[in-house]
Image (tube, rainbow, N blue to C red):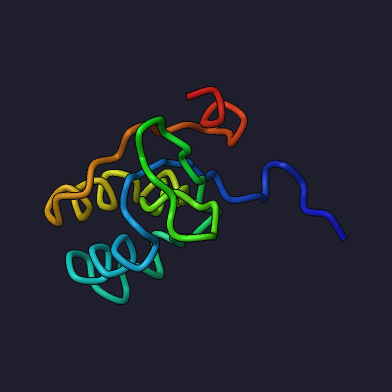
Length: 105
């Protein structure tokens, strides 16, 4: 059964240059296990950036850089997640309410 729009979580999507493991570790280190649970951080996907001038790994056709990670968290805890990532030196490139808007970057 579908939830009503008023009962759904209000989430924000963000894109970073770090891997999912680094993002989770940064959030866990800064706001702890309870903060990670309250933020409801969720890995969405990894976008492979095929930038010019970056050689691919041998025979795989995948660029040597891991690309960008898209994650999401609740609106209430977005400032905590931003602070956690900033303390770890991870830069958030863009925050949006929809995945479609992040794709336009």
